[in-house]
Length: 155
Length: 155
Length: 155
Image (cartoon, rainbow over all chains, first blue to last red; front, side, top):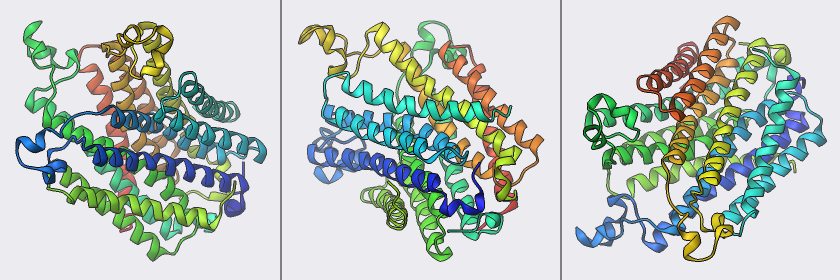
C-alpha cells in the first residue's frame, strides 16, 4: 500500500489521474456529438428544443428519432456502463499499491479499448471490432477487481 | 499537492465532499420523482408493478409511456452523463492541490448549474435556459480536466 | 477523520474497497446478461451485430426489441442510477472516519439490497420485493450523505 503522504509523487496515482481524465473527456465528447447530430439533423426529443423552428404542427415534425442520434446515445450509455466501474475499481486499485508497469498496462489498455469502441460504434465497423474493444475494457476492469479482492478481501 | 496527513483539515477536499454530496442527493431525487409520477399517473413499465391495479387486460393498460415520466427519466440520464465526469475529475482535481477560491468557484458553479438544469428540464423552460445550464456544468468539468492534464500529464 | 498515512491499514477503507468492488462486479454482470440474451434470443439493435445471420431483409428481422433484454437493460440502468451515488458518497464517507461497525452495516445493507434488487428485477418477483430492495439501498446512501453533511458542511 502506497504511503499517502507521498500521494502527490505517487506515479501510479498520477497515471490513474491522467488516464481517468482522458477517458472521461472522451465520454463527455459524446454529449457534444449528440447535440451536434440533433442540431444538424433537426431531430429533437423535447418540444422546447425545436420551438425556434416553427410553431405548433410545424415544430412537432422535428420531434422524432434518428438512427445516427440513437447510435451516439447507445455508445454514450455503453461508456457510462463501463467507465463507472473503471473509475471506482481503478481508483481503489491505484491506491492499493500495484507496480507502475502493471498499472500502466491496465490503464492504457482500457483507455485505448474505449476509444476504439467509440470509433467502431459511431462508424458501424463490422463485428467483432466493437465486441472485442468492449471485452478488452471489460477484462481490464475485471483484472483490477480480481487483484483488489485477492489481496485484501474485507467482508 | 496537498499533504495527505492533513486531508481531514484540507478545506478543498471538505468543499468537494460537501458539493459532491449535494449534487448526488439532487440526482437521487430524480429516482423519487420518477416513482412519484409513475404512481400518481399510473404509468408503469413492468407488469409486476401494476399487478395490484387489476388482473390481465385490466392491468396491461397501465403499461404505457407518459411524457412527464419520460421527461424526468431524460433529466436523470443527463445528470448521470454529467455528474459522473464531475465526480471523477473533481475528486482528482480536489486532490491536486488547487487554491481554495478557484476550487469553490468550480464546485459552486457546477452544482448551481445542474440544479438549474433540472428545474429548466422538469418545467420545460424555453431554450436556451436548459442549454446554457448544461454548458456551464460541462465547461466547469472541462476546466478542471484541463487544469489536471496541464499540471501533471503522466502517459 | 482517519489518518491518511495509515490508509492501507484503515479497516473502513478496506471494507469500502471490498464492497464497492463487489457491487461494481455485480453491475458489470448486467452487460454480460444483456449480451447473453441478445445472442441467444437473436435480438439486436445495431445492423452490424446481426450481419452474420443473413443479408439484407434476412438480417433486418433480428433488429427488434424483446421483453427479457429490455428488462435486463432497465435493471442495469437502475444499478447505474443507484451505484454511482453509493460510490461517490460512500468513498467520501469512508474517508470521513466513521466507526467500523456502522460503516460495515451501511456497506453490507447496500450491497445485499442491490443484489436482491437485481434478482427481484430479472425474475419479476411480485412487488414490493423490488421496491423494498430499492428503498433499502436508497436509504443507506441517504444515511451516509446525511452523516457527511451533518459533520462537515463546507459551503
